[in-house]
Length: 363
Image 1 (tube, rainbow, N blue to C red):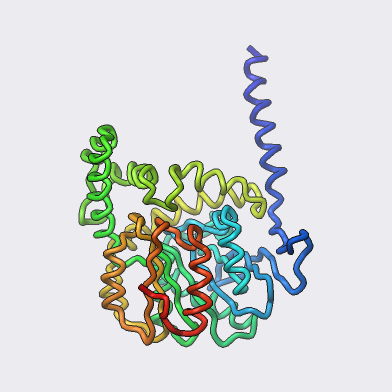
Image 2: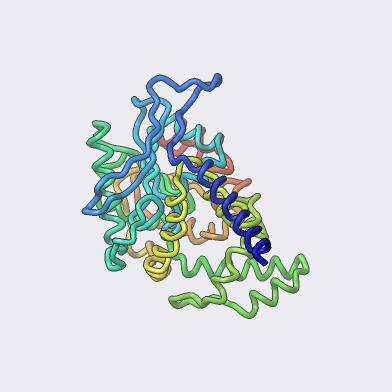
């Protein structure tokens, strides 16, 4: 009996030991083709007090003289720095052109703390924090303005920040811009139901038919339980190639060497914490009526296979949004994350349109 008990304990000990070894929690240097640190590059993990709360971020770039880009991650609270590490070409595109700040929002990832009060996790607080992080970066790097890029759930907060403080930014780059997410969920549901019927997957058809979304908040728990699995099995979730959240997101979070073990735990604690406090607010808000104009150039990037944030809803919002320069760019090989899926097209858009303040490559 004792022997039987020792076996799983031994396995657990080995697992914990391996996890500790692969989790030093120090960001790697940016290196050249020979593996030598690039002179003038920056790679750091820091925590800064933002509006009274300690918040974490990774700051990386190949050249400290480049402009600054603040990246606002998706989800209600899902950091993406560890996910970007899965796509080194995409990471290099950003780090070649910018000093990139991968900020992890209040209550998420590096910024999660058991001391945070639930009432401090609000939409207004997220926007206020975003503006404060912007000011921190402007002051630190002596820039009057920075660039702002946001993905998915992060676009909900970022666009409101841009509308409030346009003087702080050169341009806004939205990847899978949220507009009316409640309608998006219903459009995605109808698409998935149709596709599973077409391919003859009766099991998924029955599960979806028994768990339809509503046009009211909160969405049914039964729908949310099947949503991600259905999207990823069809290749219309996080990326076109990702078929499982476990293999595509969960495992990479534990394999990243730039986080300590406890920081990895906090990625998932923070996600649950933030989702419970912000997701329904995102669903219930139609940005088309909240933000109708911005005073800086805006660039919307969207994968044609994206059903996490559906293309027609985002495009309709883009057409109504007023801005001095606008560009909408569809990505034929992408689902929800074109910055990871088609990085060379991102490079072209940055160099030919964003930095030039034009929209020559737009659809």
